[in-house]
Length: 224
Image (cartoon, rainbow, N blue to C red; front, side, top):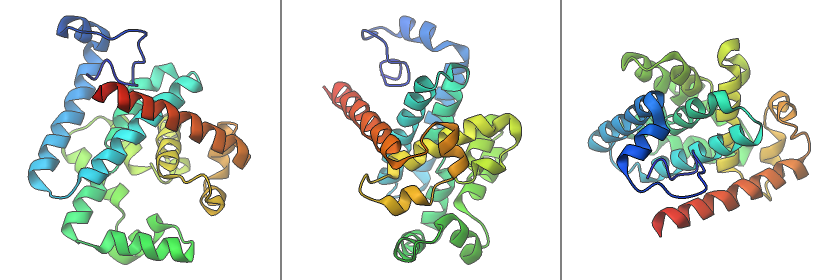
C-alpha cells in the first residue's frame, strides 16, 4: 500500500511484498517504521486524533508532490516522513490541554495572528517544539527532528535542513489552505514562496489545485 501511494507514483501497482521491499529500500523501511511506530504509540495513548492524522497524511503526500515538482529527489523520502510526523507535538498538546488548541486557532484566525507565536506565549512552548523534544527522546534522526521543530519557521532551521523544512512548511500550508483566503497567503513566508516561484497568489492557487487533484485521485485509487 505504501509503495502504491503518491510517495512513489509508480506507473503500475505493485502486488507483492518482495517487489515492494526492493522498491522502498533500507532507508524507506526505516522511515516506514518511524511513521507506523509513532502512529501506533499515539493511537494507543491519545484519543480523537483522526483529524490530525488525516492532515498529516495529506501534508506528507503534498510534500512528495512538491519534492518531485521541484526535482528535489534526494530529499523525497525524508520530506515525506518529516511531513507525516510534523504535528506529533500537536497531538500531545491537544490531549494534555483539551480544547485549548482549538481556542487559540479560532482566536488567531479572527484576529489574523500567527497561532504558532500565540501558542508559545500562552503555553510557554509551541507544538512544534514539543514534537521536536519528543522525537529527540525517541532517538529520531536529525532530519526528522528539524522538520518537526521548524515546520512553521523554516527560515530558522539549520542550513543543512532548510530545504527539507521549507518543503514541509509549504506542504503544511497548502494542506490547510483555502483558495479564497487571500489573508492566509499574505501571511506566509515570502522568502519561501519566492524560493519555489510562488510569488503571486495565482501561482500558489494553481499549485494548490493541482496537488488537491492528485491527492484526491490517490485517495480514490487507494480506496478502490
